[in-house]
Image (cartoon, rainbow, N blue to C red; front, side, top):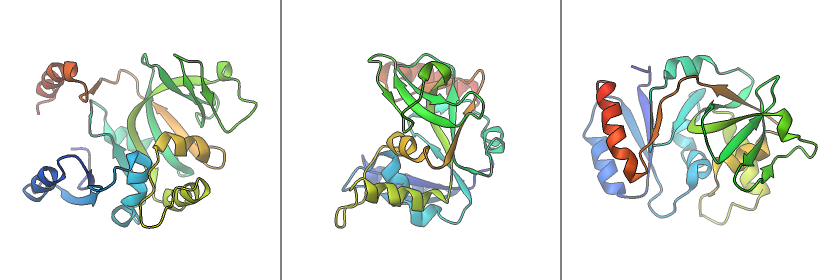
Length: 213
């Protein structure tokens, strides 16, 4: 329904069971990016899956433990041609927030509201003059991002012999936003559930029923 007919699933925990499931369904075309031996986090996982993703123009990254009622076609229509990544954000309570330029909605930093820590490649950043939103774990990347990710990994000493690079995608974004456009798109009235928490499973079941799943 969202217009997606190809997907890449990175596997680690219960990898055999996940791969067996992908082989036994025929709804969309599925490829597996194997991380059995080394968990790579989102940034490293995307770079590791380059062979499956490069050449498609843009691709959606969606955390597997997030359920939402996002209109993915709408989100894809918000992507600017000059962006290397577009991040879905919302105005919800969160201990950590991404900071954006109020004029352009370009990413400029990150803030931990619990500790007061600010991270940004811009030394003169004033967080009080930024828009602060919570990240959803849903984003769209340009396939021009792979060479930039590789440069990040090399710059930060993450390429070690034959071991794939492991790095969080937010760390990469906070480095890359000094050189490239990374935009935030705010979704109003977004219903989002983190099913990685046991106390959210009942709410997740009710949500899926409401969506006709």
